[in-house]
Image (cartoon, rainbow, N blue to C red; front, side, top):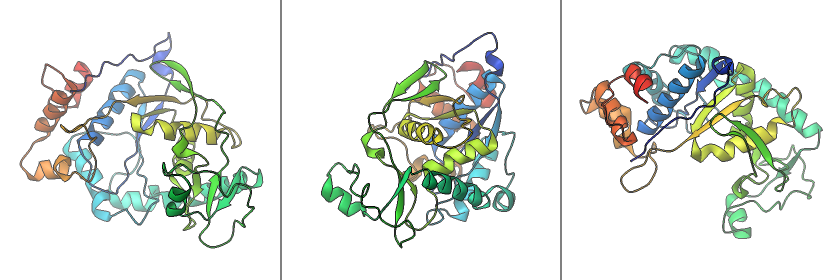
Length: 305
């Protein structure tokens, strides 16, 4: 059971602190109840600040992306009656105007800037080699000083991280928080071996490009927040400093594991085909949250949570 009591930071001008947040699903599987829960919290917090909501679909990893999963995002948002303010209205609009491939020049410019400033190094370590060097899977910095050529085949580009440097960000519940990057993100990858920019870079550049200043994500992505804040400090005209973050608890299955796209029976698509209505799914999420009063739509959620 998960109970959510928001303690959103307020001030005399709290309703104008933030102007734009986003829904940022990855089309690598069907949206599940955990995604919907995160979306609903985004709507709740956006409503508090009177912020607009952008739909941003992270599709850079084309090997995992399927057209049916992109379609599912629009179908699910429509089925759950979750209206966003900005972004693509359908798969065709997304592909033509909003796909990350359209912003590839922005990512490449950022990579070139980071490379010229000496913040990157090339690395040819495989996952197997990394595990051999460190069973935890944390990168040891093996290629940091090898001075490998960036333009060689099968080279990933890593960002030099000072593991001891504290990273501060604005938590909308708790104020400024300061933490260190987790070991698993040591010298994190910003360009993959296939030449495409990696998630930490694309997510940051997209938020800067669209002007997102409020980010709601699961607590499992706290490391990504730290990586992106750290990365932003090494790019010109850092506009990420004023961004507010909220990291919510995760919905979990009865066995304690978090809901995931691999668990198909919690996907909205599966529930919809099984005869469940929008109201049923809202009630399921409400029960998971420990709410005593049933919720049946977005309006109920905004009023009761």
